Structure formats: C-alpha cells, structure tokens
Image (cartoon, rainbow, N blue to C red):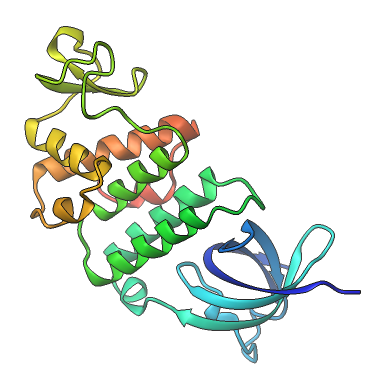
Length: 239
C-alpha cells in the first residue's frame, strides 16, 4: 500500500528533474528536512507549480517512496509576496533558507527549527531589519549546541572589557586575551540582546554600523561551523 501523509512545510530550494518535474527540498514540521518530487510542475498547466517555490509556506499531501517522496497536493498557506517582490528581502530570505538547508540533517524532525524559520520569514516580511538574518544565524547555532559566548570572555570568564570576537575560542574575548576580530561596545550589546532572549529589543534598535558588525560576525560564525561559505550571503554586501 502507498503510504500517504500530510505535512506543513517551508520550501528551501528546488532544482529541475527531467523536462517537466522538480525536486523540492522542504523543511517540514513533523519530519524535518526531506526531498520530494513534484511531477509536472514546470508545465504551464501545473495546478500547484507556483506554490512550490523557495520561501513558500505550504500544506502538502505526499506519498512515501524508496528514495524520494512525491508531492500529490500542495496548498499555499503563505507565499510571503513582500519577500518575492523586494530583492533585498528576497536575498535575506534565501540566506535563512540556506542556513537551515546546510545545518539540518535529513529526516530528523525539529519543531523548534521549523518554528524559528517560519517566524524569521514572517518577521522579515513585515520589517526588513538588517538584524533578522544574523539573529537567526546566532539563535540557530545556539539551538544546535554551538552558542557563541557573549556574556563573558570565552577564555577567562571576565565580564568587563569585551572587545574581541574569535571563532576558535567561540565568542567574545577581553583585552587580556585579545585575538580575532575587534568588536565595538554597541555590537557587544546587540550580541548579548540577541542571545540573551531579548531579540525584540535588538530589532527595535535602528540600523547602525554595530548591526553590520553583528551581521558579519554571525555569518562568519555560521560558516565556520559549516566549514563552507554561504552562497546566498554572497549577494548581500559584506562590506
């Protein structure tokens, strides 16, 4: 018997298969990351091809296959039109999707990662704040057990004079253990707000050079753990 099931998912990426099909990489609420075939979606007569585009939040019916599952129904929950029509927001959204795609193992459900990704996309659709993506990177790393140390020196535990960030040490350093990248005091505060459960307060701060520092540090930290560059981030201005 064919095992049919239903899932809610965010579309992470797609690529062509044959002349009319696509493989869709999804992050689902109940099954984690998985790949599925969407047959005929590249035809102009496809009933749900446009719904299975990256950033789309969809309700699906699929049946299980030996290697790839197959999408049989797809209903749009939220297509986030503001993300798709604003190139800056779209670039940031793809950075969120790539981070999950690269960090999440296949078929290992994690409801918190699903909720974090969906929440970040919803936030980005409402406000294109430059801290949305780096905050997501940092919180995703923390969830996976790689939380950068930001409340004290990663080398000695000193809480004063934090002015450096080192990838090898895994966080902020004081002047006595200076190495890595210098970090301004405003950026230190933003890092502490994001990882201290006060993201809303951080997002209420206006864009600033400190926010740009946090963006670069968060990206480099995630890339350090992935041991690869994020392709989607290359379209953003790294400065």
